[in-house]
Length: 149
Image (cartoon, rainbow, N blue to C red):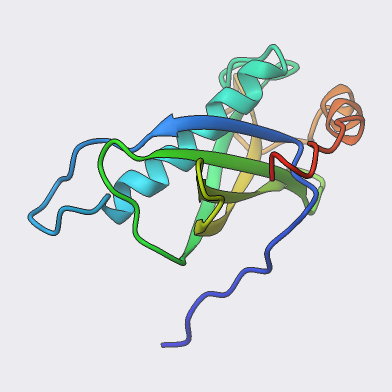
């Protein structure tokens, strides 16, 4: 099977520091599921920073349609990491959030990944158009300073 490959990016619009949880298995490093949870926590924090809850973003719900990750290095319990997000590939019913998890102290990349966000009508539970106001707000986000990334 070919490895999933992501290009690194320099246009992050959001970053949050998180702490890796206790190990799930005897390997002593942060498990792949836990790294995906860190990306999910960052996604929730991103929408919260915009003043939204994922069950009401300009009148629609936000669902994860897909998520993929490329592992670059190990992370360990209690390690402080920074998760950085960039908005990508705006489409009619959703968009992608590219993410990078790095060691907060050294900046060493731990994972690169993508979260496919889908807008869903709250009553019909069917995919729907990305609200225009959300598109505008995402387009107006400013890039983070280079020293953060």
